[in-house]
Length: 361
Image 1 (cartoon, rainbow, N blue to C red):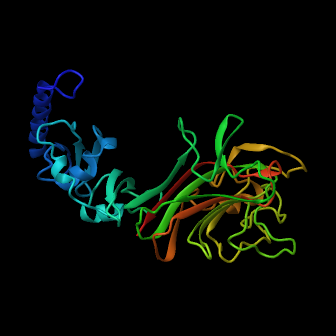
Image 2: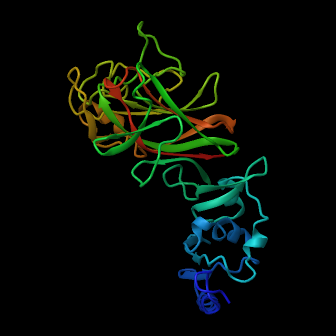
């Protein structure tokens, strides 16, 4: 018998199993139109499911929904981990190598945290999106980046610096370093080979950003340079391979060289390596005077909203701020995120506070 403070008591276990029997009885009488309720305690008959969801501490006690057909679902409750003959012990021997591998072998698996085995044999806990509603509508997406500075105790990833602007906690390049450039951070692919990337970035405009940058002779910059004021997402090196770019235009109402190339009647073009794989918005609703150092918080960048005047043509994507990009070939490269500006702070800055990136085969 467990003593107080040391897990569930003998009577708690009896109650748990009794409830489980009642739930199984209801399951036996369910039809395809019913919500069939079952417990997840029988890990020996379904160790794959138990291992991939119920045996992970982040999911303990959660309720998950498993789609059996288009109309039939099982709600599964994960039991405590101190039951006699813990089925996790047997189930932990099962290996999966990505979220897409899990979904292929266990159709209907729920979104959540899972253990995957890397090529070197080590096990890592990852978050799997098994619906992919923000991506391509299919599941099996492995999350490789998750920045949300609105959460308590959130910190910026290595390579980016943390600041507070007007009570907003954000990540940016080193604003104390003079000159233009980029701040960079990398996200591991966990050794997974992928051909598709999906994600979103949320940022803000500070000062007089310049959209697509050129050199003094007006020539296009390379992908290794701060080719745009905004966020560059790439993989690989020598050269970097472009995935997606989030560009910040100077204002919504003019067609100067500093504004979005997607603006109505704009003559600005993106570099060939970017093409149409970008989003561009401005946070400023009117032309910016010189030395107008304002943090534009009222119009979040790249969300496809509040796109006034000439900028309306930049907001036609129903997916923004989410993108989906297919690569030309499979890779397991880390994904690099750079925050870039062509001029130094306090002239301009593009801080971000949310980033999610997913990979799939």
